[in-house]
Image (cartoon, rainbow, N blue to C red; front, top):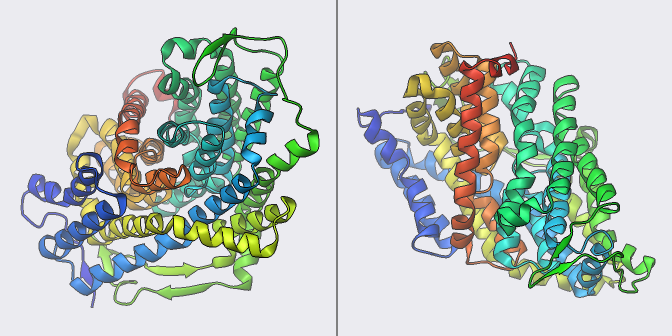
Length: 546
């Protein structure tokens, strides 16, 4: 039986919105203020989402239960599968002592912790975002930073802050492709518009990242490196997004940023080197500590292998080939095509699809698992030792997997019950300020779902409709949903759990959330201000794609 979503069940948009937001308050409040374990907070959030959906918004209980199970399955595969196998790779490298070699080899490039952070979290992380997305960059960079000696809070929070500007073009442009699909707006127009918006923030984020880590004064000491990393990312991002499309924006920009930063660091160093415990005057020579090239190469080999494999797994032709070998598609009973989004969220009633695709061969996590197995051979592991390490990793991340499953269950329940749309319609009532609050709607969407792609699917159509009703550019506001959404990536519960697991700091998710929340809201607000300028103020209006 078909069920139509209702967006104002209480007959008062303010109270309906307040009730719709209750699961968010429960989830984030349990993490940030009551300091519950992440899996307990996630289960509480899920319980409140199911209660509000069924008791207030009138969703049939069987459909609510089905969509929550659908979300939990998606949380385990592919998201949890990524987490498990990245930590498996980390465990293998750590077990052979290669992180010590990795740390010392980095001093051949720079001994400064600020610059190591910039290279790993921003430039290297952007490559993984561009190639794979879906939590991969945070898991990889947080694990590496821990191995380099960063504290768990810094490694977690700073990896989340760094993983912002590249997100809109993550996984070979998937968020923009999805946005075009739900809005009907030309893909290249959306790509160009998002590129014009995020160019500013690609320049800003490296400075913001080091300011968050070391303070304003210490940030200024390394401004040439920050400018090089940011500009080498921002310029290709602008050019590729405007003149080619969304597919290679992240990968090309990240590669340029890595190259530019490494070249600079071989010719320039700050006058003062910042370690974890002290500052010291720079020396003329960088230290390799007597490590042989073969040993250094072996220490870096797991991450080089991972980079190559993840990139290959992100190529559409490779994905299609692997899906052609095996894919299992299961329509969710009682849900697929039997829940309808209603106007004004969509132009006309539209049935929601709900098909779980178990395309295990093309999962990014499967590519990471393969990279880990290859790395195990390179590092000299016997099959029995590698299997034992995988089992230890599974036991270690079991609560993280439960948490991610519950978080995704909250997101799907929110989506299919219409709670997200109820909140979105409230943002659409802000009139002349809609460019600002519409941007924050994208931020909220990513904070809820953990994915810029999912946020674009949820709110893309609403952004287009609201823009047309207010006389704004639909291209501008649809793009703002994605650009604003990238700043919500650092506070979504899924990403925080990925970071806490990668840094072996499970149970401290509330501290990570408090660490990054200001940065997330502040950067999202700056994106909103830029969208306001693009909507109303010359010469920014010239940036708007017609």
